[in-house]
Amino acid sequence: MLPKLINRSGRPLRRTLLRRGERYASSSISSPEVLNDFGKHHVTKGLARISEGVMVKGSGSYVEYVDGKRMLDFTCGIGVTNLGHSHPKVSQAAADQCMNIVHAQCSIAFHEPYLRLIEKLLPAMPHPSLDSFFFWNSGSEAVEGAIKMARVLTGRQNVITMQGAYHGRTFGAMAVTKSKTVYSDGVAPLMPGVFSIPYPFWHQHRLPPSTPPSVLTEECLYQLHLLLSQQTSPKDTAAIIIEPVLGEGGYVPAPKEFLEGLRAVCDQHGILLIVDEVQSGFGRTGNWFFIEESRIRPDIMLMAKGLANGFPLSGVVSRKELTDKLAPGSMGGTYAGNAVSCAAACAVADAFREENILVNVQARSQELFASLYALKDDQTLAQYILDVRGRGLMVAIEFASSEAPGAAFDPATPKGLTVKKGIASRVAKKCIEKGMLLLTTSVYEVVRFIPPLNISQEDMKKGCDIFAESLREVVKEG
Image (cartoon, rainbow, N blue to C red):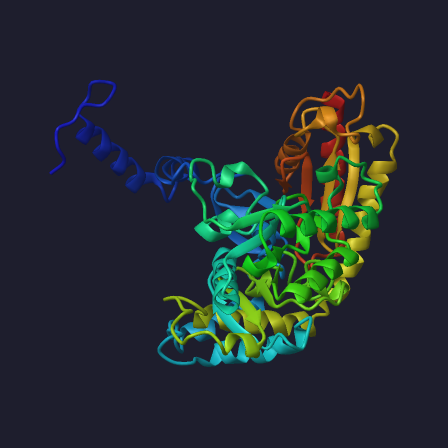
């Protein structure tokens, strides 16, 4: 029996709780509003949402809410459902696997989907040395595994990360995340032995958007050499971890020469290069993995998100000569490499090849960039748009803001610009009101586009039109 407590209105709390429970139990199925209210009351406030309502269905490039609202999805669950929602081949593979075996724990025995997945991924690896796989559940876990492996394999502790990087919210991953303070507010002390250098992103060097990649690269590599001389000796440094396309930090692709410079430093000092392709992998940037563009060899590569198109699965890939040094039992996890998720991922790999996904990415990417550049060239909008950037269908547009971090010292900040704070979030909100889900990113005024990789030309145009209309309305509002 509940104790007799009094709520703020003076009524017995037990009676209030019972009435609330009866309300939800009697009306949650028939009333979307009550179901949404139930979620607001019982789901932790630590989670944020960009839209109101309860999703109940997804198909292709669209999602539906319990109240019947249908939305064009340019978020893909933050780059997860790369093949669109409920892809028939992927969903069928998962359903079939459910009728065979759901949980074949990786420390008990091999299971077939795990091994078939490796077989399908080997030809897609950006370097032939990447031939040893460990599957886990999330991107954060993959980062944790990579850090652990690097420390064990090198006998060193320290890790160098990038300013603006996002690698996750678990403890080790949170320590190498430098994109926003919200992810680690009040959590210190974080994992020790983490150092950071600037990323070749013009904001971080107080330079204009037009700065050549070679200049940014030279400055970043100088800072790396300085760090290795002043703060973490190479003999104490286990790894350098990098997103080859900065994700939460603003959708900034790393120049080829910067990645080459990191590889050279790692080779010189026996440091492992960890490449985090959790968001940029699986066709998102126009190749299976972005690192293909530079032909750089990772020592450890991380993948997740699009790997299984919505089923929880991540991967840590390295070379056998390294992973053979790991003690059996040092890696693992109850749900690591779940059979259903692996079966779904096998179907994802098949669909990529059978449906010419990368060809569609390149075609739709051209259309998206053309639309955004047209807005940037529009004289009524030009002063509000600082940059259009990205690769494939991992694309961002950054707006000018006099209230961005360090704006008073940033030469990219337009003088005399009058626009209310939060232009990016205001534009994204307008898009949501008009029927399209869209996300912001970074501490700057950035909107990111992450549509399905198999999106149709018609839906791409629809999304671009909604965005353009929303931007013009926000600018007009001031």
